[in-house]
Length: 341
Image (cartoon, rainbow, N blue to C red):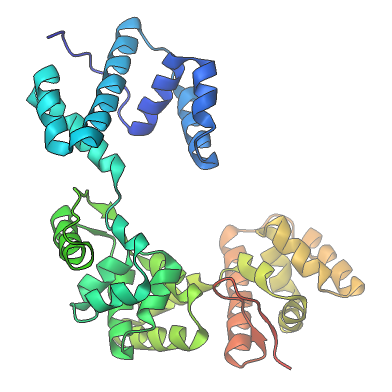
């Protein structure tokens, strides 16, 4: 067996970039046609970082690429164990197992079968499970499906599951495999895939979920979490609606908000705002008020980032207060918002 060349390309993205360099511009252009825009951008950045690929590295890259393709083809023909047996003969046990594991990892995401299940099926399978198990499952659902699932749970379970989801950062491969196998056996007669530990849940997961639900569900969950963990509830609230989300308000709602905001806070907030947010603010102000705001912004000069963030937070608090009082409706889950008559 030829000596194995140690490649300097560690991640899958780096290897993809390197193999595209080796294959040449014409083939790479064809490959890019089948990739998502963000994937193209990421691989292009890695291509730009690669300074040199030696002849021996080119050979090793092509050999590895060919072995991965063989592994994929063998799995399709006869399953994982069939592919493993053939590759062990060709490459040896250690390298064969590495290629099989890599292909298997690419082939399916953890809990991938849940994408084909409707919310009712998932609910029937998890409703009597421990809240930690339900939180683990919800961490692998899309926000809209997770929101639809949690609304079917009792209020006290909603709170417990949401708190656990917000505090969850990762789960061990063993725990994921155990829960996945259990659900797969119930739903699809024994689907099981090899999974790796991955980040799931966290505050943004619960924020995404709440943004898909209605205001009543949000309040129930936040109030319940606040009783157990006030700091966590406050952190979730801060991220539910950020200053940049002002662009989601309709014109009448934006005008109502601007009437309640101090001009200095508004000027400070504009220092760190996107062009879309600035345009939203200026178009919903009378010409005279907009002119005064521009003068105030110019007068401020350079400002500290923490002062900008503090002013933006004040405006977000105004928005939430007006929403709580029913004077405006903040668009949630893709729905429209507007002033209540």
